[in-house]
Amino acid sequence: MTTRVYFSARIAASTLALAVLGLSACTSGPSVAELDALTDSVVKSSFRTQAQAKVERLTQTDETNRLCSQADVTGQPLDDNTAKAIEAANLKTIRWPSDGRFLGDWKQGEQIAQSGRGLTWTDDEKTPNGGNCYNCHQIDAKEISYGTIGPSLLHYGKIRGVTDPDSAAAKPIVEYTWGKIWNSKAYNACSNMPRAGHMGILTEAQVRHIVALLLDPQSPVNK
Image (cartoon, rainbow, N blue to C red; front, side, top):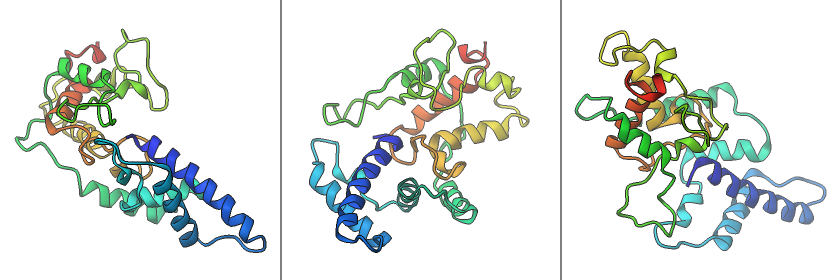
């Protein structure tokens, strides 16, 4: 489940909860605790666990999701201190390449970026998840079907001057790219981008292949 789907479900439930509480409290608004409690009740009664799609995906056990969801529901942006704290906490969760290699095979990266399969109750749990990257980004110029929720990644490495990903000069952007894919909220507190590595959506090897798709000079992204 993507972060956007998570937020949509939580917002829908929170809106219903707010309406219910509003009917019973005309003179004073509900507290955050009351709204959260009723939202959780609505979620648990409206969704069910089936195969690998677990209701737990919609619970507020993750502090980052809880704070970002609350900001969406109230319409109040996070204050700078809270946003920075979220980013700092998520930055600590990034797992860097176990063998020190940041780039894999861009051809496999393209396949992963194209695939939107995985994590639904009808998917085989043994089948590798896709990254569904084209759902939000333009990546390869040959692909004409892509979303625009996220920025275009066309010429990603070329624009950033990455001619040799293994060079010292390229290290900052290589590490940033890995970290952004692993846990996007380390760089943007309430990013809609899924925390692909942190949440176990993609494996370390898959992240490595997507980094190659974006940064390898031989990738069609950079032609």
